[in-house]
Image (cartoon, rainbow, N blue to C red; front, side, top):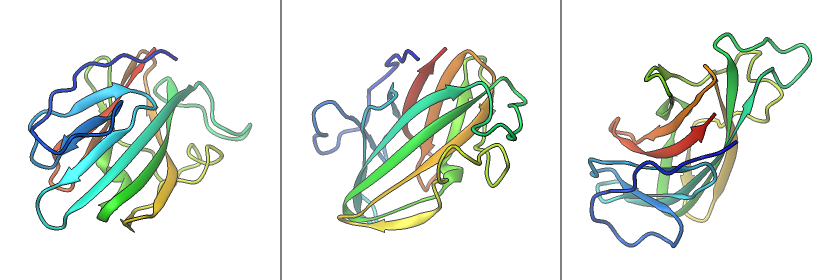
Length: 166
């Protein structure tokens, strides 16, 4: 799978670690980077937090198991998400992820269905305190042709994401 960086302009915030994308809760423009690039998330409103999220995304033309249903829209895009909280407490939910396909249609993650079974443990909602990490998968049933896995903050603003090329 190939990936391409589309944008990286964001509102002013503390410098992000080298090689990472940066997003804030108040930034009007989100950073979209290639799969596997760290996305630094900061909050300057209560509750304060600093976290790094990484999503490594891979297409799957079939389900993870022989008995899994085939994707209805073309393929499964499976994002293996890792969240490392540096300060404060970072609260998240799988519903904050979306897939924007190349044709402009938005898809929500598959939750609790047979199609998600076997790809690994689902990223369960939670509040992660500083110094802790959490990992899990987010599965989308999407058309082939690439797109973007997007992450939205608690206020519904796109905080960043990762581009997935076909």
